[in-house]
Figure (cartoon, rainbow, N blue to C red):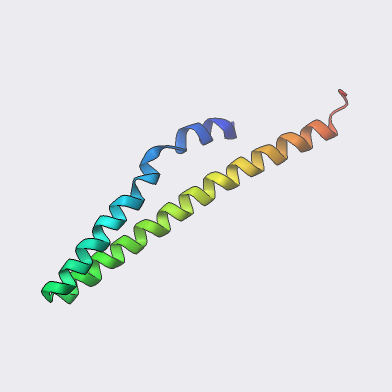
Length: 82
């Protein structure tokens, strides 16, 4: 059942957050050059949140993958069919 969730939630949209965050960060640098610090702060905060969400998403995917492999290995070790 965990494999079904792995296939469903592992998608390229999570990886698309990285270039989008780069675009927002570049826009924040441009807004700082223009002199609108409030807009630059908002854009850099939004870019930081996008990167944190990407890291949490891939961390969760890695955790599901590791726990699935460990659970499968544990079940095989405890089974009587060897």
